[in-house]
Length: 186
Image (cartoon, rainbow, N blue to C red; front, side):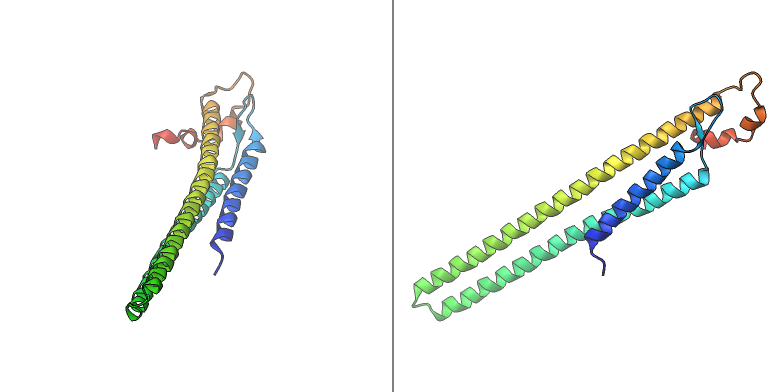
């Protein structure tokens, strides 16, 4: 079984790699004449975006796994605490005449229970911090992706709305389907 933390790191790396490839594709795209826009292969861009979107749910599964582990740890700690308390009761019943032993057993049981609850609280906080950190990094990646997509769409709109200059070869612009660039109509 693969370690969820390494799976998470790998998924984040994969998403980042895919987004960097997408950025490089836009940066190295062939420039449109008399425009700041570039031509990119739609299938290549869509494939990279789909791969990035498919990789992200691994992070969410990892977060759910951490929460499940926390719940199992809490349940186990409660069971152990209950077992210790029950053992203390049995021991106390056997040694009723020795009240000091009974008090000590209760004190130890309470200490163990307090320690287990403190450990469970700490684990819960660590899991929540980890999940929050991962979600924050997702938010940053998604914001960057959305900004890149918006800029790309704006650039594409400029190409569609631009009229060819005098003497410019209209054939180069005619090879594009304007419906491709106007995604809002579909």
